Image (cartoon, rainbow, N blue to C red; front, top):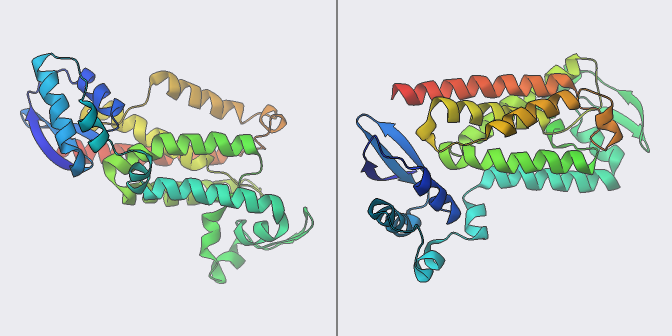
Length: 282
């Protein structure tokens, strides 16, 4: 993020922020002392941002001239380049899903939380978590997050990874998103394994960590740029309850462990509280 200008602390920036997002200008507004500070994610979009601010300050329609819009709008591919961790999470999950359909036993034996052996799709033997750790196969603590056993489960998870993940990466950087992925993924997988499950997978724990993180950031630091509608929070929590039932498996989501969802949500609430508290102190 790059600071652009200071705004009056009492300024109502809702219309400005909507216009900036409409033109795909990554930004955030933070409260700094006696002023609001406007930041831009991409310095190449500074001119377009300033043009919108000027019109907003004059009370004019928040529209950009065609040439400015085309020149400064990041488009699809530059936007993807600014979100490498989010894109990687989506792409790796898609690739693993395709490979899982063709080479189920081989992929499961490599990516499940403990070493497994399959004949076709039938599990014939499996190791232990101690074996995983002592043999140096540390990746297995995270890799089940990239396993999805149903296309609806895959689409649902990746949709929310994209929605929440790009907010975290745009406003707090790829390192923070990577931290959430690793911590939430590992803890969710361990919680699921502790519940007595061997064959499991999915990004659900990470998704709920992102939900908790983004929600707390948006509530505790309104000027941070994070946003999640309250109805979406209600829906996601309701969905968590739904996936605790057998009906989830009947519609293609598989039997997602409750522990993964709850564990991920707790991780996100903890990180959201920590980062928001640090922002408020500064």
